[in-house]
Length: 400
Ligand SMILES: Cc1cc2nc3c(=O)[nH]c(=O)nc-3n(C[C@H](O)[C@H](O)[C@H](O)COP(=O)(O)OP(=O)(O)OC[C@H]3O[C@@H](n4cnc5c(N)ncnc54)[C@H](O)[C@@H]3O)c2cc1C
Image 1 (tube, rainbow, N blue to C red):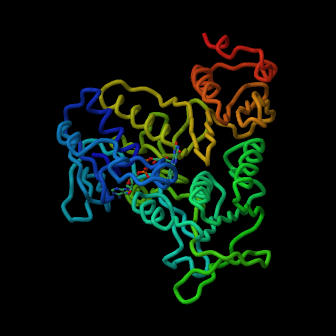
Image 2 (image 1 turned 90 degrees about the horizontal axis):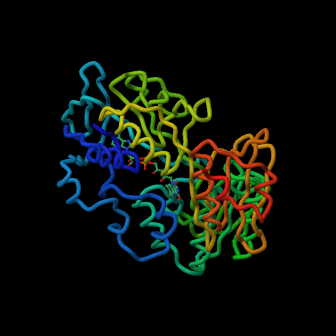
């Protein structure tokens, strides 16, 4: 049984069938839609006019044909001794192996007036759908948080003619995830597009006139007018189901390098899983499509007899306005960066090094560098900083 039908849950069900698994697959889906892709929710879907069907991984027929029981329900508790999951609808469901793919939920803002109707979040299809109907030219929106989702939303809203202010507590945009070079580039681009970015400040309250949002107050005393507030301040992993069943959790459901919890009959995958990383050492909890789908494939392989250690190479992308950012590797703790390409032309990559070893590449509109990085780092390879910085050096020559 799989709890959660997001990227990880869906991929697991599909991969199990592809690998020849012929047992029952119950896929619990607590959202009112067929399983769908999340990345377009802050990108093409938000911008466009296409319906929810454009987001679905597969049509309903797929689940029928593959004998995947897509059950619209919510798991409320796990009885590990009896190997049963209690559902919100009441009926318990038995499992042979249970996979928790419960993902994450929005971190909610805890300030006065945060519960007003015009204070919005962006994680689900319903939230994106509601937001895109509000993107009317001339409206004023304040975005709280300059992370990937906040900036993707801000760029789309601006392109649709809204007045956009972004409020960020950090000293640069996307500070927790990218190098200063990438932050600086995107800050300049968004500013040039007319987005006002306010760094090093915090929203202390949402201002209103009755139920209507009128703006936000900042901790430096300023007031910024707004008709709509969009909050992108991160997520919290959905670990409660596991914790209440007595499974160890920390900043995610704790799993080993095979993605197994402390219970040999329960695995956890995707955004909710804090896994022991064979490749990087220590524990990692990542929020990306790559992580969710590679986790799912690893567990599907194990459940069909091909046990392997999870060794995925992290990669990620973010579309902001006309620019595509792609990242590969883990750049935490880098001590040197080398820029390859042309920042002025908006086509460059930042190669990140730690103790002389390449640990990650961030690319802006340089898909070739990104793909190179995936192949090189995926195979535990490296190139020297001098080679990375030499425009004449043929990256392909480093791939064996
Ligand atoms: C707007 C947006 C844009 C993004 N853009 C990118 C991007 O460009 N690139 C990228 O790599 N990643 C992106 N991500 C991140 C990526 O979508 C997530 O990492 C991915 O969805 C994680 O998949 P998951 O299956 O682990 O979790 P989720 O997709 O969160 O799915 C978990 C599912 O489990 C359900 N669930 C939870 N508890 C229960 C329960 N008790 N019973 C039943 N069901 C339950 C949830 O409702 C949800 O449907 C984006 C995310 C968002 C929100």
